[in-house]
Length: 379
Ligand SMILES: [Ca+2]
Ligand SMILES: [Ca+2]
Image (cartoon, rainbow, N blue to C red; front, side, top):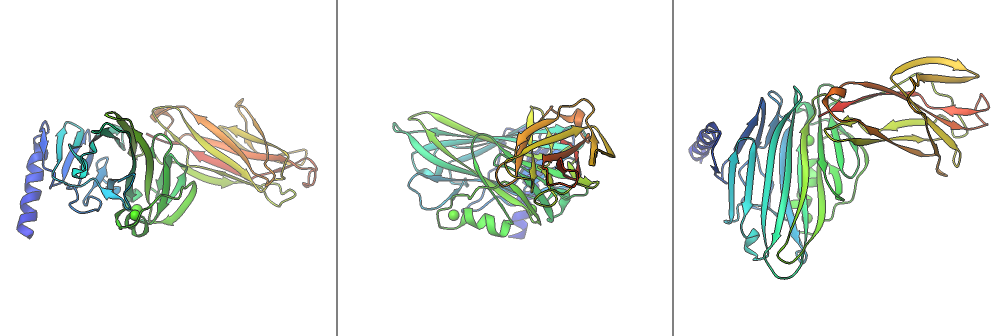
């Protein structure tokens, strides 16, 4: 058994060495590179399980424990892995792995193709962009659920904090490194330790993900996205996702002293802010303010600490706009911050502070949050 494994590893290495190789075995790992970035996808599973031995690195730390895809047909009572079902082939050309199933699960319903392309991102980042396409082989429409599962250990450390929403989870170790697991369209996602989440996809019961947004951890992050797709007769549908090692990690640090109001101290909170190749947005949230009132978000590139008319200001606006929103009855106001794209903004600090019109505050005008330093991550 051991020697068989060793032989397979040696074969994988020799396949990798021929970088222009076309055919890669489905029963051994395949590795592609782009600059100093490396992505390894384990052998296709032979049971309803995730691949083993996956890795993603920009040159040093491997951040990816496991990653794989699962599906469920409309009348199935469980999820199934995209496994080595005898119809699968895999090729590796340059930075791209293409895995195809000519007749997924021998069902006579769909063929499937997973295209995974690795790119370097800045000097320390790496990104695997993936597209899974299902093609209907029948003359009637079909409904499928697709699941993409990933277990990131940012910094090579299982103790991570994740923040995000239904499309994007940014996962960091708080010290050295952050990753992003990202999905297009209107998926449902769920976050949990791998010991809880992976069995949901590999067990014999039907699972629909519960949805997630907010904050997770410190804990061992794993997550899955679920898409429900309708594939027209003889047509195709695709979904795509990204596994990313960020070129620089985002951070959130509170500073200064706020001013309490009717509900005590209002709180300013944010998702991890990441600038990407395309324009992207980050949600900033004021909570614990006076309900049904007016709130303002002050944003700038410089922090301060000065009291004007009894109000403690912690941000110099620098000519950036001040955003206004009404608070909901529960005292929450949501702001969507649109960020410019890309690596040039890596590590930029933004300073934010929220105010809520509140005559019951000590200054008789407004309560105010602490300041929040938002360091931009990027890929
Ligand atoms: Ca299940
Ligand atoms: Ca993890």
